[in-house]
Length: 157
Length: 104
Image 1 (cartoon, rainbow over the protein chains, first blue to last red):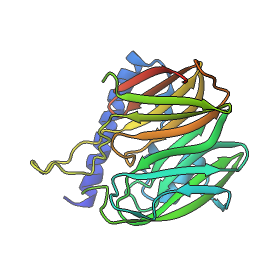
Image 2 (cartoon, one colour):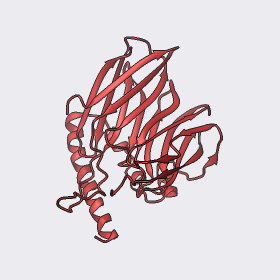
Image 3 (spheres, rainbow over the protein chains, first blue to last red):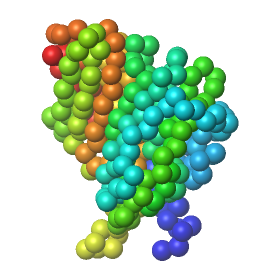
Image 4 (cartoon, rainbow over the protein chains, first blue to last red):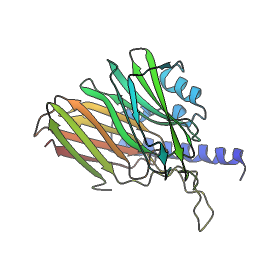
């Protein structure tokens, strides 16, 4: 199957999913939260596109105040534990970007006012790549990356 | 989809640590079914919210590249033992589940 066809197919399923979501959202959760899910950012194929779509900017400042914990070598790319912690003040969101995945944006966490700047989860990595943590504080974006070597890919396996 | 969530929340020194596991296939939509050769449609959690006594402490937006049976951990201040913690998720098919628990 050619790449273009796959994309069309993907778009189709996503659109259908969105329609179904709208219906059940109306019935089950009468909140507007689903509308907030940044479809374009998660569908973006490049890191700058994803960032611009999610944050409004792809300007990142490197920071040594962010710690990413992830294995140096992940034997199984389908399950890579990643945790991000930062000592930067006033953090409103932490995003995790997997540089070379088909859709680089993996997750974005919006923190409440009392929530500490720490999140941990597990992500899939298609191959060896840099995992980038993007921390938003005020209007600025800070980032740190960590290279994770993947011996078995997590996507399309 | 009942009981798809397992949560543990514990207070130490005024900081509540929340650890959650959700049972979910998290299909990316890029993987082919080995038997039929057809693509398995994308099916993944898009949003997880966590409320402490009715106040939102965390909203997680997830893409399909979160691992199967997702794990999530975070910490927040201000919780105390006995407080209510509510976790809720919604996936791209509109399925959802939520769980209320008490902080230990």
